[in-house]
Length: 245
Image 1 (tube, rainbow, N blue to C red):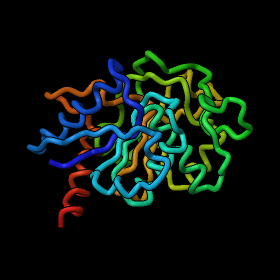
Image 2 (cartoon, helix red, strand yellow; image 1 turned 45 degrees about the horizontal axis):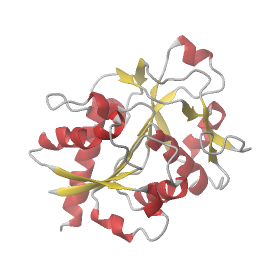
Image 3 (cartoon, rainbow, N blue to C red; image 1 turned 180 degrees about the vertical axis):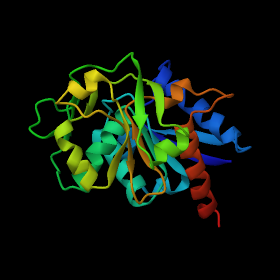
């Protein structure tokens, strides 16, 4: 058995939180394995992060604002720099974008509109049209990890979020190596000039670093594990093998 750490502040009774461990194990069971899932409170991630070496993968949970934005961002940076498989959903995806803006692009004042709405440099802002409670289609970009995992060029996913990447920052994310691999192509998204239509983001030159604005794990089942979660677990298995050599 190996371990996956969940960056976030656990809330009992929260569907997006309660679904994480089962979804990871739906995917792990497909490999004939079981994974220990351990929550890592964001306030515990503000200092020395050497204890993260024990995890084969890091999952950044929805449920922001976190108790410590800085702790969440520090752990995401650790995953990116140490090439630890990473999956961030909803708030986890949004904070991965903040991490990249701050630490790869040098925008140290990059902020999230949920925790710092008055900031002059918002990379993540409140969506013009909320996605919360919606189930929407998206197109998968050919040649990306996302398309390979879904094994199709389109999908339908469930959303809980009210925040997303500002469209004006898409080119900066691309320059940092972050590819938009899942796109909302609805008329509403096309006509929205403020918010990015990006729904899946993946980092090039990393074993597995992906963020989704939707929450894939809530629709995972034992019979049908979610392909994105399975991709994350597959990468964690490879990481675990390297850890135990």
